[in-house]
Image (cartoon, rainbow, N blue to C red; front, side, top):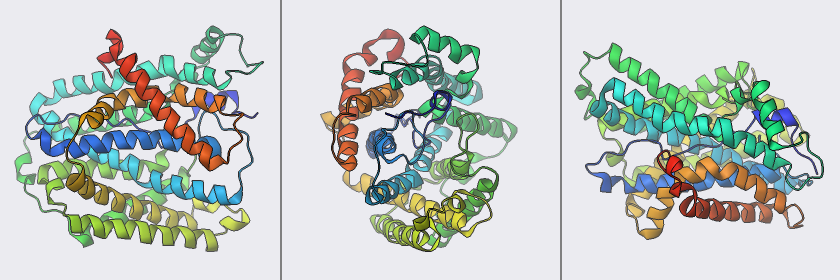
Length: 408
């Protein structure tokens, strides 16, 4: 059985993770935004599925990967799923977070807004860094006869003394990034406090050519960033190769609130961008694999640098990311803008599931090592089990603990 090296397991996690229940929802008209709540908990489930996929595909970074050979057909299936999922759900959630920021700031003012963000984002982040991250690493060696430490206390001592906690944000890197984004927004509002923000209200929904320009802009920025920070590199668990999209999507969310863009996205518009994302994205993905050298194992040009493969990957990322996001907004608003009891349950527990899923998923994947199923079936099973177990733990135990329920 093979696991990640000790230090790697401490300091690296995949970037395809994010909490989604960390933004304010306006009290007035909240019923019109139930589809956003539903999108949140669906995205949380996709987060768990991504980490389950990495466990068996070995594509990306995660705490534990099962040491089972992956066939080429399985690698292609996993890779297709992971790259298209990665292309949209992180930027999409930054967009949603940005959408609710102006309302929160307008209502609370700078000081209260920053204090609220520090509480809602900072406390879960610190909780993960100083408890759940070392616990997650400890779970990697569950059921093993030998481990690199004598006890959890021994591990924790090394974790603190050697400074590994500085990169111990794990999946809650999103909270860290969003806290930074919100702080920059607050500073911008303070500096430009004489600017009339109301004049941004009623701005027209971007036309197709504007959205195409938006895709091209993020593509260019991503390509330039990946020259110095290729895909797979990180700075204290922040992967800058994806941050161009995150910054622009967050900013677009702010503008979308001012212009009331979400209500202007038609079903036809959603279908158009959905087709563009899926058909165009798959065509670019397959063409890149065939002509870019991937079949011969030449993968480095795709990750970054002055390579056309990197530029093509950046374009595919943004084409799929923007298109799928617009499609989901239109589709969920028309089909899933209501909540029954199950949806309310999933929504209420989504953030707790996100925060606590890491040690649960690691433990479950260790328990499934002896199950000799095809890897794609094990991926599906691990995804389902992780969702069920974490939701039960959240509802029955975690959100009933006084100190935890206030931040979850």
